[in-house]
Amino acid sequence: MKSECLNAIDAAKGLGASYADVRIIEYRREGVALRNGCPCNLTSSQTFGAGIRVIVQGAWGFASTNQVSTASLKETAQRAVAIAKASAQVKKQDVRLAPKPAVEDIWCTPFTIDPFKVPLEQKLGLLSEIDAILRKRPEIKVANSSMQFAREKQWYMDTDGSWIVQDLIRSGAGYNATAVGNGEVQIRSYPQSWGGNHKCMGYEIVHAYDLLGNAERIRDEAVALLTAPECPSGRMDLILDGPQLALQIHESVGHANELDRVFGFEANYAGRSFMLPELHKGGFKYGSEIVNLVADCTVPGGLSTFGYDDDGVRAQRFHVVQNGVHRNWFTTRETAPLVDQAASNGCNRAEGFNNIPITRIPNLSLMPGNWTLDDMIADTKDGIIMEVNKSWSIDQMRLNFQFGAEIGRVIKNGKITGIVRNPNYQGNTPEFWGSCNAIANQDHWDLWGVINCGKGQPGQTAEMSHGGSPTRFANVEVGIRG
Ligand SMILES: [Zn+2]
Image 1 (spheres, rainbow, N blue to C red):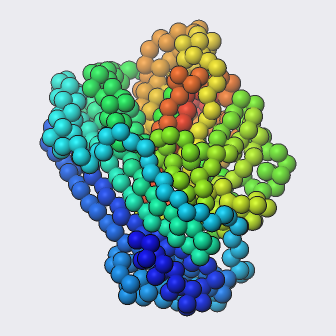
Image 2 (cartoon, rainbow, N blue to C red; image 1 turned 60 degrees about the vertical axis):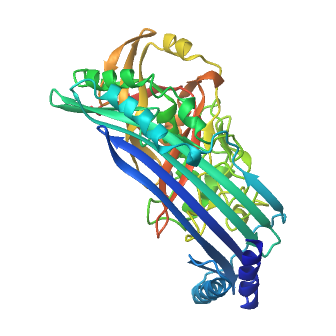
Image 3 (spheres, rainbow, N blue to C red; image 1 turned 90 degrees about the vertical axis):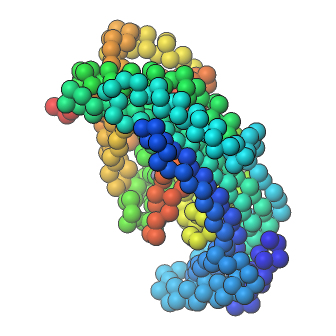
């Protein structure tokens, strides 16, 4: 692919580009899903193509093709340059890119079992076993189970001297059971909702969770929720499990710290951010002193774990919030200079070959604390644990939110007294993180994948992971507002 990349770069330079990069991408996906015992989704797809991004007269242009030939790459470079020239007529200022070192490198996701080599019968066999357990009780009207796998090979070259080859593998599995009765519909999922848990690893993720061993519990909890009391209302201590915490991190910290959103370059789809450069300069208190939120594209297994982003910038680890204080944004080569950062921290990513890279939430995790979950529960007088996300709503500035979980467990005087249905809570981002007063230790910590983060116009989907362990927040408004 090196000669194809060189062709594209030379064509763009010859047409007057002051900067150009090309990404040739081969993307393979496989999906296997059962619904009530029947295969409802068996997909296998492959795409191949190239995207060329250029700067001409200080403005961006981008074009893509699914024909990776010399003639097609030249024609694609011409289109990218023509778009850049048109964009230049309405630019407010020239695009400036933060410097970066030129690299030649190869990076591959470490994995043990190639998911594309595991026979379909084996995948369907496990899902069928799970399905049979889930549907053993008549109250379960819908049982879904699925696995998804992706392999993305990237060949990247830019006019700043970088040549990078990456081979990324993502795998995931999970299931849910929906119970109907008593005028209620209740769902339980494992290991989390929205298609299970996904990581950058091989088929071994299927063995990393006890999918079969948890099916009976998940089924019985869905049924028990039909007759469980409603979530209580009022202020109490709230413990979020890993999957719900992940969604909390994603919506109230992740999106709020995308610098394109902060500056309003990206506002139409999902809004802007309450976080502003002025707040950051004042040492904004984003959370309590035990809150350490770390972006890390080097963490093993993260969906946003890679060697280099789509600017060709090396994957990094940095604090977004350190001991409660705001430290950093998610930047690209273009946005880093806007906040006086000497270099990008590597958050520019595109979906596939046919989209231009945009600022993306990287892997972003709440660092573990010192508590065991048992001690945390024993230390809680009046509280509730909420597990696995069911619904979310957050305003355009990422400030006021309301989240719902699948199941609540009420705590009275240090003991779990029972389950409640339709648990939900609401809050305000810095107030909520400011009330964080206990974080469970590393033994309880895991990475939880988000596979459906939508952003941009035209819309793009990205994946990233959020690590967390059960975490307690004091005096949170729970249930229906009185
Ligand atoms: Zn998102």
